[in-house]
Image (cartoon, rainbow, N blue to C red; front, top):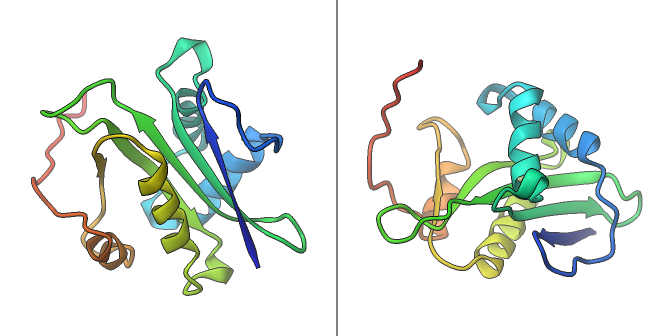
Length: 150
């Protein structure tokens, strides 16, 4: 059994404590080849929780009810924009690799969609199995992203 908890910036949260180190390490481990260095994940999480007056966002955790171990995590950040750029960007989502295929990612995504105001953008590698989940939930590929790394 899974419990879902949401943490919104500048609102009353579910009363659960937030262990940012646990969340960063979980995402780093379970994002696997789609992940980033822990430092980048930590910066996205700091932004999400509104550290240093950042706009914030929505953090969703899924925990196993019996052990309270993390089963999944999602970080969505507010962009501060609207219309020409979606209001939210899904930065990271991962489920425990041992628990995949049980619908945890879908539950987390449904929670994310239900708790955000405005549109949501996300980046997904073409070979990521989660692509099909995003498609089923109504996400559409609008652009091919290009980046200039400086």
